[in-house]
Image (cartoon, rainbow, N blue to C red):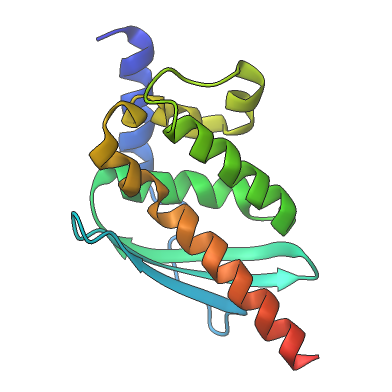
Length: 153
């Protein structure tokens, strides 16, 4: 195992243990519950919006270290961003997952910060859904929040 692979593995394990953003909102604008049926990982993501900005994003879930770490990393990346910025980051992360471990351009990879550690996960098709679980929940929760705010105005 290369020192880079070892560092990436350590980042994933650290995020799986110290879960950034884990919690529950009292009154979320949007919420999404997602399950990965192939392995049983599950997550509930809740968001509050301030205009088109994700002002708060929290989650609660259980599953493998890959899914839990990915959600933790995603929380740090998208909280405080606009929904368009969060969607762009999702696109970059999906591109990384679709690279089958070859990686993506450094400029894009840098945008993912600790998310770059998941390059090795992309080599294992069965694990890609684990890594994407929280991202899909975030997208769904923000869509629901946007609709709820639109209906409430």
